[in-house]
Length: 102
Image (cartoon, rainbow, N blue to C red; front, side, top):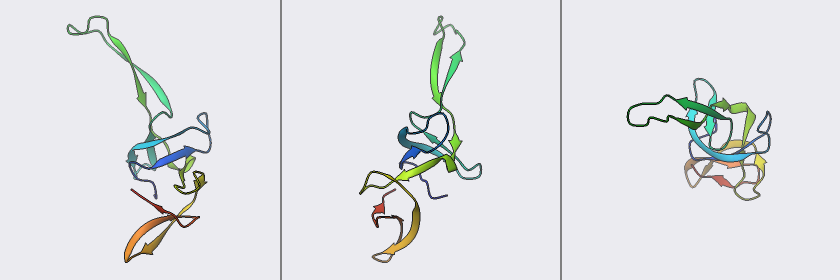
């Protein structure tokens, strides 16, 4: 999986197609990622003594990693990623040759 926490991605399929966001969490064994602003779900909290009226929270559910693509920092478009060596360090490179930080 070439996606890491903090990467900027765009959704390429599904109900949230076209939305962009920052990766908040990565689940490599499940091949899923949590992206801010994508796949929102409402969670109802029960009333308690501290909060007698209860509340409704917005949580971000995981999305399949194959449904998102990294955004090229140079062209600001979706791109595929490959590994390369720059100055003796192994880094992720976009199609345009830009180094993807993360």
